[in-house]
Length: 62
Image (cartoon, rainbow, N blue to C red; front, side, top):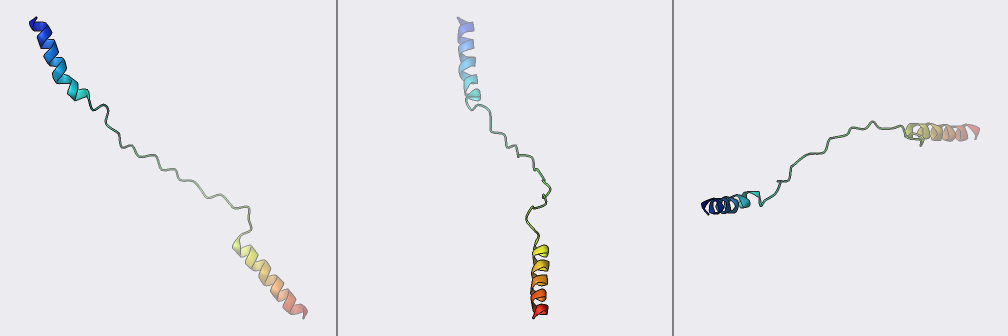
């Protein structure tokens, strides 16, 4: 009877320690650095150069 009572006391006292479950781990996601891919659209310098050529070509033909 003493063994049953001791086992009951131990189980009652130890159960609140497990009641919280596992704590949330604060794991940060890895930082992924990605190289910038070249755009398929024309760059601003190309557009500026072509616009300048068109403007000066139109002015020269006048």
